[in-house]
Every structure is written in C-alpha cells, then in structure tokens.
Image 1 (cartoon, rainbow, N blue to C red):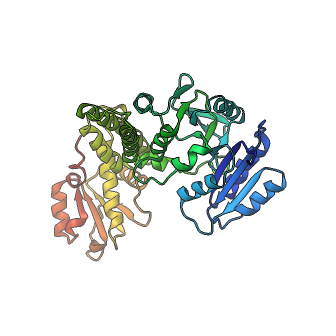
Image 2 (tube, helix red, strand yellow):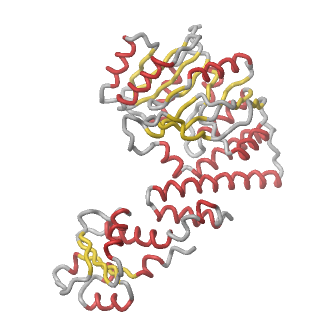
Image 3 (cartoon, one colour):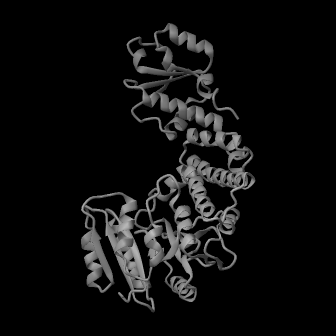
Length: 415
C-alpha cells in the first residue's frame, strides 16, 4: 500500500501561469491531516510547465509529474492523471481552480465513515478570483444524501428535480478504474455516475468543496472554456441521462414498461430543453442571435416557447438576427469590400450594430453614394430598404444576389 489517502489529479497543457497559481494555493492552503499527493499530467506542453512543477517540488509539495509524449486531448490527459494516482481516493482539479481544504477534509471523513460509497459529489462555487468572492453556487442540496447501490430510479428523480450536474466528486479508487471510461455522445458526468452507482452507493453532500474560477486574476477578460460545453452540450446531456437510465434498466432497477419509458423520455426531454435555455442566454451574451434563434425554434416546438430566457429576447431577436445574417452574407463573399446602406433612417446606428455582430473591419460601410461607379458595383453589397431600391440597384449593375432587402434577411425569423 502507498499510504497516500487522497490523490489530487491535475491535467494541464501550456498554462504555466495558471498552474503556478493553483500550486501556490496548494502550498498555502492545503494543510490536510492525512497523506496526499498532487498528480500532474502534462499534455506535452511546450511552455515552462515542467520548470514550474520542479519549483514546487523543490519547495516540498508532494507532486508526481508525468509528461505525455504527444497531446492526446483533454480526456486522455485526465485519464493519465487518474491512472498514475496511488491514493485511496482521487479528485479532479482543473489547473485554474481551487479546492476548499477544510471541506475536502470533511468529505474524506464522510467517505471513511461510509465505506459503501463509491463516489461523493457536491455542488461547487463559481468564484471571482479578482474580487475574491463566490459569485454563485452550481445547484443546491438541502442536506447530505446517500443513494444506495443500484437506486437508479431515485437518483434519476433527484437529478431531474434538482437539475444536478455530478461533475465535482471525490472517487474511491477501487471504483474509479472501471467507471472512468471513454464516452463521446453521452455526457460523461451522467454516464460515470451510472457506473459508480452500479458498484456502490453514491453521495451528494450539501457543502461545496470546490471553487471553479470564472474570472481569473491572471487573465480577467478571458472567455471561460467551460462555457462552450454549456452552449452546445444539450444533446449530450440528454444522452448521458439516457445512458444512466439504460444501465439501471439492464440491472433491473428501472421499469421497462412502455409507460415508464415514455415518462423517462419526457423527463430527459424537459431536462435538455432547460439546458438549451441556458445556452440561449450564453449565445445572446456573445451576440450570436442566429444560434439563439435556432435554439428558440427547438424550445418552442418542445413546448417551452414561453420560457423566461426566450420571452426576454423575443422583441430584439428578429432585428438582431437579420443584421447578423447581413454581416454573415457580406463576410462570406470574396472580393467584397463595401456595403451600401440604402434607404435606412439611421445608418450610423446600423453600422455600429453590424460591427458588434461581426462585420469584418475591412468592409467599408457607406450610405447611398451621390453617383454610382459601375467599376465598384461588382465589389459591393447592398442593403436596400425597400423593393423599389432593389430594382434600381439592379439597373445600376449591382449583382442580384448581393442586394438584400429586409424580407431577405428577416422573413425566416418567425416568432
């Protein structure tokens, strides 16, 4: 036996500044009363990651460092860290996030007192490192709750009602080896949860033991990488829930009647649509109204057209989607360097919106010129404020498929 109780597993790649910050926290805050190790898996970094790690090893941190020969992607890199771990328990730590040491100690005590528990999950804080405060908490649990081995129906209902995402957990090493397997189409956290529940009990603790950094002091304006999954992962979330239910069904713990399957299917659908609503909010924040509208249509046909996330963007969506479509069409066309706004009441405001929606800076935006240069017409796109203007621009030699009317841009945004 190694004598190590907890392995803190950190995958990393070319993020030396973030890793240094995370290890600073380890050195300063992680004063555990049990033996632990920090297992770092380096995905073939080309920066000074190795030197950073060696600095903290020299300071006495219990680090074991493994560098992959090639970058194999995030999944294999995390698997590498877990495989090299020798502790009785293991926990994942992103290289820019932090553990709450005293809460980890409490969770470890819970696991020691409940040897039947294969995985111990908890909510987590979204943390603003610049302001040094927790902004919010991702889901909530009223009290510590343990689900016995095989209790798939009860745990599914808990996930559905609480909108639980079991992404943060401490895992018993004996269960981890067979639970952490590749999954592509089914969200890993739900799939692995099924594997843990298949091997033992699963617990959800009330108190968070993890801080996910949403604004880092190293790069306060960076885009949070985890947002991409939220913005595109809704079908994967549904797939993960279906995977979870399938394991329960095959173990005889989920009813296989037509009525039961229909009910579970409906709950998976509702869960997915609610995640789409979150994605709509993120896409609007990124000013991508085209993608927001696509999700709008799916939510509406799914019966959630009056969801608050949709009603608050409904008035602005047609105009913003139309303008973004115009920016897309102009950007997509080679050899176009001018956009004429003809018949518009506030061309300066429209240009500002087009720029904010992605119109490329090399495209000149102008109002209708007093004289038309036929040599420039083939290199120009036109927004014509009414059909009569379109006919006039056609007669002046502008290309027909580069003269856009309001109807061309907005008729397909149907609310």
